[in-house]
Length: 130
Image 1 (cartoon, rainbow, N blue to C red):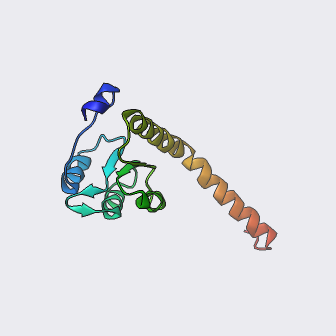
Image 2: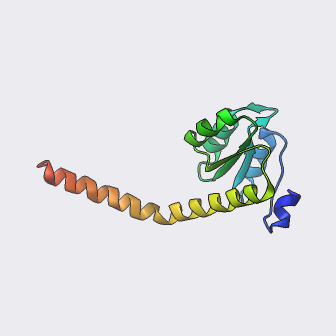
Image 3: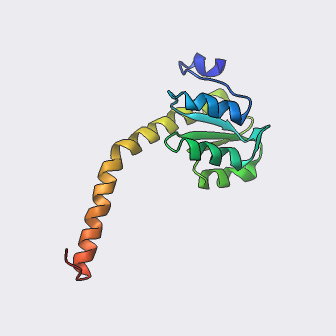
């Protein structure tokens, strides 16, 4: 928490998944830094639990197990850092995660409109006129 404040990033700290979920329920969170070694949630289950409760939040995962990097990314983590990681890596990962999330949000309406247009064109090509 002190490290992130040094980089002008506000933060809350939770030692357990249950504490994190309580804190997240209060809102005003831009990104979650999740250690996969929480005492009340093992491995990727913590990531999945937070995603189910707050699908809109970007999550940066930290882990001491390199074999969890790819599964965490496939499960939806914005980034995964293996421990030990230095302060610059962590801050960069958080900032990138927040920025990617922001940009995806801005493009979401255009992406949906493009999908709908492609479906219409596909239907015309296949002879399924509206």
